[in-house]
Amino acid sequence: MIALHVRYAFKTEDVDEAVRCFTALQAATREEDGCLAYTVYRADDMKSFWLHEEWESNAHLEAHFKTEHFERYSVNGLQKIATIREITRGAPLA
Image (cartoon, rainbow, N blue to C red; front, side, top):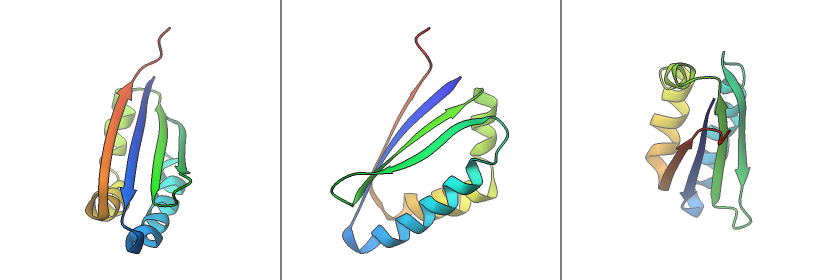
C-alpha cells in the first residue's frame, strides 16, 4: 500500500474554484481501481486543504496520475492556483 498526504493552500479569491476542483476530483478518484481511500479535508482557516490518499500499489497511483480527471482538476486546476502544494508519500510501518 502507498499513502499520500498532500497539503494545499490558496488565495481567498481562489477557494471556491479549489472546492469545485476538489469535489470533482474526489468523486472521480474514489471510483478508480486500486483506490483504497481518497478524502479531502478543509482546515479551519478555510483556505487550506489536505488530501489523504491510499492506493493498493504504486502502479495504481501512477495510473491515477494519467487519468483525465487528474489532468483536468489537479494539473490544470488546483496546481495552477495553489500557493502551497506539499506532498508526503509513505507506506505502512508494518
